[in-house]
Image (cartoon, rainbow, N blue to C red; front, side, top):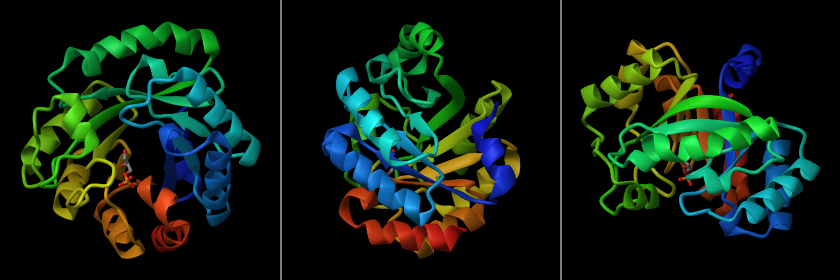
Length: 242
Ligand code: 1GP
């Protein structure tokens, strides 16, 4: 089953909340998830660039599942962030990494766990776009073939590659807390060339910006930092995209 396509049959645009297990206690993660759920978020993603404590991921997912009844999706940086109690996992390839670890190695390490624990994989082409002067955490840890915000053809080439590899979606990522989100022109140019759903996240801080991204062609908007800093912004963002 394709979760994103199923959700998109019911709603034109989706919102996913990202919770980094390292940024609050499991109890607080559950509370944050509940607030976003009440505002209408469609799924909770659990992950972060440096998470490597499976037990912490487990306890965070557990608390979130007790608080909300929408899908939980792991968003792992490595096989160590795979936890058996999640519903789904983004089985993702960091397409523009030049490090074999993020292209295929961690996936090989995690595959049998996903199988054994019956977590539903959602294949995803993860494409990191460099939009900020100060490097984001994902840029620092992942050894990238950089794609600048104005390198639109390069982003299209990666996105088409993901589609031809039969991935279920792509994620255009500016990085958590990015100074600038992925540019609208890039999203609309990629949208014009591919059919699979486009997730956009990183540096989206208000409703107006989120709306611009969905108008440009994003199907899913992801917020992480706003969940930690000002939950009322999540309400504004969800209202503006739906
Ligand atoms: C990071 O795109 C997500 O993977 C969320 O970014 O923390 O900037 O919302 P923010």
